[in-house]
Image 1: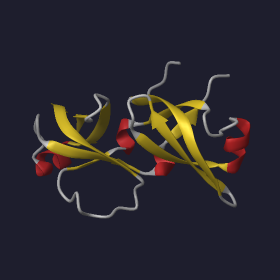
Image 2: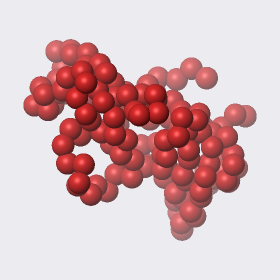
Image 3: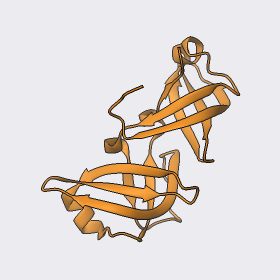
Image 4: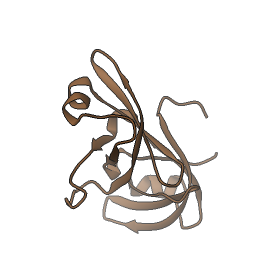
Length: 142
């Protein structure tokens, strides 16, 4: 599969919580990260999403926020993956930030140049990748 999403994780479904319109689907990546996705109930049926089903979780880098402080803050975003910054590639408009997770996986974020500057992002600094469950796309093999 070729796709423009920078964050692509092979995973297995660990829980499915059906709602009236949408469902919450929890997956565990091959390196051990828990990711929560919100998908329609129709997608749960069409993709046959059930516990144990292999899937791929996709998150666009532009949907990932970078948090450098506030680990004691409660957020509505279901996905908060702490790690360390391994790369900051600055551009005139935006910056690409790579956060290495303790498991060895990485998360890519694209944020504004101004935000990167205000946060004082630098290699080796602790940071948390934050993204909402609605930003996660789940895919399965046909």
